Image (tube, one colour):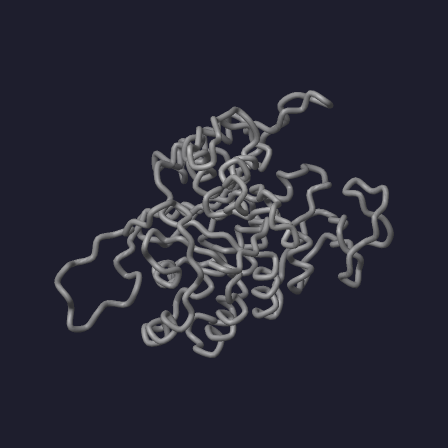
Length: 369
């Protein structure tokens, strides 16, 4: 990997992968070698997800048809400063996609970046372990002495931390996408339609998309600002990215998590409406837009295999789950966030295969729009 430009909205990596789903066999075989999604050893030494038959077949099956689930994908967005090679990455968005066996439905939920968790010791970076915010797992794991911090190495510690907290023992794939990649993906689709469920002023950008000047606002900016009003809105790439970043809102980071998920579903809906997967020209265009901005680790399987395997997953079958919580400590004594008992129980029920029944009994956890 020579170009590692990472972002906070890693959840959009899922959209980028699933956008390709549903392609014809010929299209997938024709483009898989031409467009190799950049990979990194996000989980350490790659291991095959599924053992294939050692006996060669005269007519090989379509890629990904042997992936039957259940699957757990960890999609992480990383807050970095591209112009500073010494900047240590922090996990700014941590999203989990669980796809039950059969791959026809899925559950998506996010963990707060400030969730207080136990981060295990990590000899690769010299980290001794600690009880602190989830976002720090990436930076603590990324350190390599005097060398440039490694996002792939940081991801390994983050994955271990998330596994320990959730009880999900194995993630079958992981992905990270850059700011640039997400913006280009949305633009390649011609923008997306999303229902803005609460008035959302931008702390970062003006109505024309340019950056706001330094000022005294909550995020340190001032002057005219872009505002996303309640209602169905059509957002282009920079608007979609900007909308999903806002957290100085009622509900704070929990609101931002919900907006992340709603935006991913909007991306999937637009891709399916264009029938991207079955149009070779559309596949070509989207993959060109994606380029080097997505890093994916499928434990030995390329991203496009997962795309084909998930081709039957429709946007309406993607259940977005919000996990409420609250702060630990107040004022100068604030330590981070903790999930409510109801939220933690959802995760344990998901791991046990009882998510549907739990959500029926707790409908407030389901994001409706």
